[in-house]
Length: 260
Image (cartoon, one colour):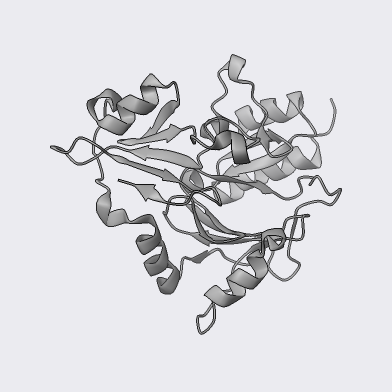
């Protein structure tokens, strides 16, 4: 019987030790084919037997962590889009908590925090991977030829995951305009509100990830996306009872507005 790959061992460790929901990736894209019922990051699990089956099938698959489903808010800083400079500007006069950190292999970094916020863009090259999003985790390979790796002094097995600090909580609440969204208790029929019906009619509406929140294909996807159609970057929110329109949010770099 062959030895599990180091990627398989990492996936199992993330699920078993930290309770993070993982799934296999080919590069940065979900490995489970749509023709086999693959749902992207929504397939992520802590089921160790399922994880073993995936990595027996794809022993060299990268490890994806579904951020929001794992209770994580991950700050993705990409210097290729001026993320390092923009992040430096954002944190002037603010304290950044000591927390686990990953070097991505593409000269970027991921700061792991605990919390519950949807994915969004803070600034050019600075993205939040939270609800509806996922990240590639160590020791996965990067297109540069380098591996994702934990920062030596901030390894997850030695450095606790810090909660989202108060200043970032305030920023994210304003950024995501949470006051405009209604937290539904039960599943919502997307045809009962205007944006949901429009996206569904255009075959651009995905599954309901939580009551009243649906994955969607960004209308501008052809201009900026090489990933899954429903990758969590674009979401449609159902309105409160009695309202008819709803809200559309896209966290891609050049279409970050919430349309009410």
